[in-house]
Image (cartoon, rainbow, N blue to C red):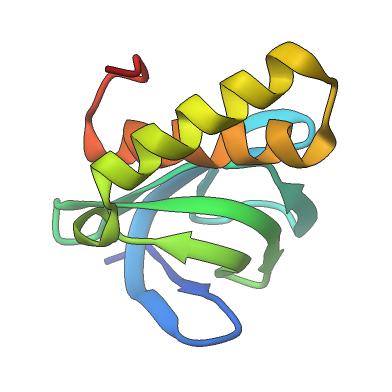
Length: 135
């Protein structure tokens, strides 16, 4: 397809997604960004977010990406993530408990690890289609 480009989502352990896309959307340190065919060369850090990939066949793939880099060179978009998860890998109850723990910890201190845990929990719950509220 003329308006598509190859992409991959990889972690140190595995390749989660790979194929052809028409658009790939994620959050970098500078905000949300969409990549399409012919995008200028780019490298940037990834903030915790739900990566959305509009596939060349008309489908949509999504994954939780917790940290890493995006690299665009030639016609290829590579998402290199420290941690990434597919929707069926999200344990909603575990994410809710992690959210509650992080919120509780942040009430008592300004803890960077709690803030990171909070962002991961929000991202997991967003990918699972669950509201962030804790029971």
